[in-house]
Length: 113
Image (cartoon, rainbow, N blue to C red; front, side, top):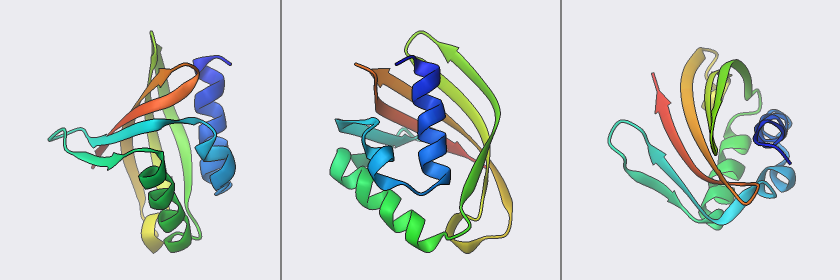
C-alpha cells in the first residue's frame, strides 16, 4: 500500500466513523503530538482508539475534507477542514503530519487554529 492509499483510507474511515478500519491503519505504538509544544497527547494504539471512539460519539456530524496534501519520504502533510468536531457547526482548519512506518501510521503531529 502506498502512502497516498494509507492517507486516503484513513480519511475515508474517519469520515465514515469506522473505528475498525481506522485502527487497522495504525501501529501498536502510535503516538500523537500537538505541533505547537510537542506535547505527547496519545501514547499507543489503545489510547488512540479510545480517543477516536469518544470523538465519534461526541461528534455525530464529524467530517473532514482535504485542502492540500504533500507527500515527502515517509510523511504526509495534510491541510484539511474539519466540520462538526464535538458538536460545533464551525469549519476548522488544521494541519496533520502523518508519519508512516511499515505501511501503517506511527505518528501524528496536529496543528489546529
